[in-house]
Image (cartoon, rainbow, N blue to C red; front, side, top):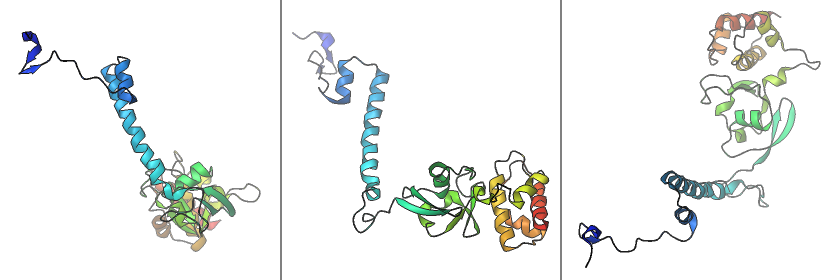
Length: 230
């Protein structure tokens, strides 16, 4: 006769409980008497391993360093490329969707290029591509292999002297916190190389893509006008 405590809603609960699987993450958790929190962590960890495996072995399949005889794998891009940076050819391993800002900072060690908004709004990452001011945070590195890249480090003179724009920034007390300054400098250099004698309005327009959270816009304008007179 079945005990009434074993009957719940018509089901016999006295039957043996189903056993956990003998192998895998869940089985090991069951055998060790893990807590609910440990159980949930185990489930999350196992899911992360499965999803990351698909990314590593599938998503980057076209980017293997072992390229076929004809170049990059079908549908992929060559990872080891040459970049012309500050007058030097640099070989660098680049992921398919890697931005130029990431490559400059974390692959080539050129940390003068700053990352602010990382979505082409603040201008802190500005560099010159063939003399044109460009947001490096929104430029894929693979698209600039045939361009001359110039960063703020490339403004240094042969004997270590500052560029006239940099010196003018110091003389006019342009920078406040200084985070946006490399981008401001590069935009100014790009302007003066194409227009050595700009008006104040032209300077204002050239720097309009560079945000200064300290509000030192007049200082930067004065600096560029001073550099133009130098």
